[in-house]
Every structure is written in structure tokens, then in C-alpha cells.
Length: 100
Image (cartoon, rainbow, N blue to C red; front, side, top):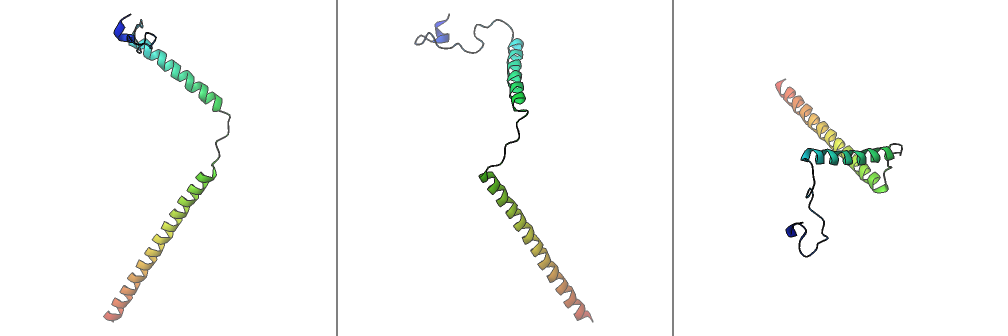
């Protein structure tokens, strides 16, 4: 074994990935993919029958605040539209009264 691979200070240091491995890169990638797929399948299978996580108080308060902000913004928009419409109608009425 080369001294520069493990280091002279620590002969028990782990080898770099792929060092001393026999086989091609495709085999290594396929093996890694299979390991990851097995781990994913195990996680999905274990969690399949669990109910969804309920919201805690912080999440509930946050969503309530966001909904309140949305409602306030909608009310402000409607009020601004009503004010603009009232001003428009007043301008039209004033113009019509000048013409007559």
C-alpha cells in the first residue's frame, strides 16, 4: 500500500473512495443507486400508514396571521376601488351638470 494514500501518521486512516476497487465506474454507480433506492423504499414503506403530521401552535398562528394579512389587503383594495369609483362618478356628474 502506498504511504501517500493512507498517510504516514495514521496507517489506519480510511482509504479514499474507490481506491483499490476492482470494477468499472458503472458498477459502482449502479451499486450506489441500488443502496439509495433501498433506503428510500424502506423509508416510504415505514411511513406509508402513519397519519400526516398535525400543525403545532406556531404553524397555526403563522398561517392565521398570513390569512389575516390577506384579508386586510383585500379589504384595503376594495375600499380603494370604491373610493376611486365614487370620485369618478362625482367627476362625471359634475361634468354632466356643466354641460346642461
